[in-house]
Image (cartoon, rainbow, N blue to C red):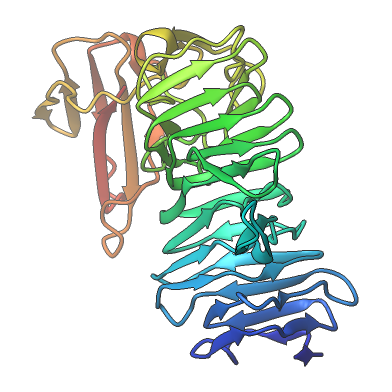
Length: 380
């Protein structure tokens, strides 16, 4: 099947493509939607586009399928829909004779999933089963909290090429990037030296169901206005190799003193982790309480914005003639603010600090009869 469409987003959303020895070629770069894919046992699959990379959205039909064919070339694969797509192709039978001259069928295994583009899981489950792996995909992204990468049936082909060994290890090789949030089902997630792990989009929790061993570069973002306020890597256990690095970046607004961020769900030990050094203007140095080895958290001690006190002291008032007296019982940095608006506006956001009020506990205001509305508050 050939397609020359540069954009083919919805045409195949409800169509199941059954590959029984045939191939799908995309003549031009663009997006092609495959509602579901099955078959491939007799060969066939998605082949190399003739000009530039193509992107295949697979799974919009919302059903669970098994695909045993090949996906090759400069293609990008996006798993969509709520169903489960299992990639398990790569075996074929060879008929021969055993030592007693009986006809037997031996199976030879090879990984037919060899595309070199990006892999994105935006919904549902993408399962990979040996001999299939994603070792050629440059970037693997779990793009939503509902995204699941099921690697529990991964493994390797033994030296004879005729036996599969299943170990459930999901390995990210040097030059590959694993990113996002969601869940990885495996016996172990192994990030080799030279690999990259970007946790969150830009924040969010990436959960591994068992052990995680880190030997590559780990990056985690902070953004105090997001929920959660940072990327977090969660696992049953962690192994941090000597080659692993950790770089934490503030991707949001200026941080507030006392902000706490959970980067790992339990204690981890990195050699010289790099935490945000200054505020966004580069003028104030951040000072951190690093509890990564204890509970996987960091807390900003100083250098950030002072936290807002939500419990200001009461403002006491008295009136004598046209003089309004304001007082408050204590001052440890409280600032008196005021705003003046017309009757149609009422209370707004145009607060102005009264000069010098930070160091006093009372002041007198001469009432202006021409000011329709005047408001006061204390700020810390």
